[in-house]
Image (tube, rainbow, N blue to C red):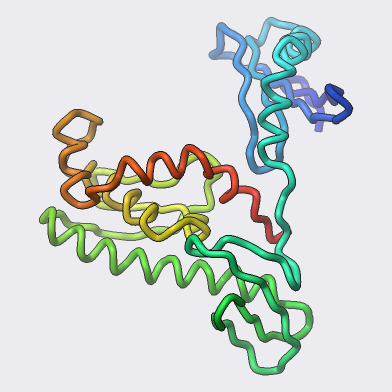
Length: 237
């Protein structure tokens, strides 16, 4: 919705339409262009005294960049009956079955969801989050003992901007979408965040700490750099 501080535009480039939101920021002195991974649109931040059309011009000048961002998320993978997804690093087919007794289970190469009234996607998403939390609890319990750190609380994140986060109070937040990655990737993210409870930086000492928990962490970083968009492409709605 347009306002005195924000205006929506549609940028056409290479036969696709890209939504662009230009926002005025009273604290900004420069132009900034970012990509909204959730809504697949460009976000342009401009100083408050700059005209909205100047923000659109800035977007046009960087059209190739935003185009590549949008294309990297194509096609989106919507969870439906018979959809194939990568789950815990392996290909699985989603199977919806109408049944009064709600249940989700893995059978060979299938994830079978039994539900009624078209609630299969809701049931599946909740099941995936609970499964993610259960896996995380086991990893965190093991790694926190190894590092002799205390984790006060574990949270699941739905962020489109980060995979993990921690604070000095011992609260750990991990993105539940890591369930679509190989479990080794989740191990690395946990190792990374728990190591920050000892070293709140990315010094050599920090990386040695990560390596003590996850010796092949460099391979997991490479996997994320190559495949992270896939984890965001899987959509339930």
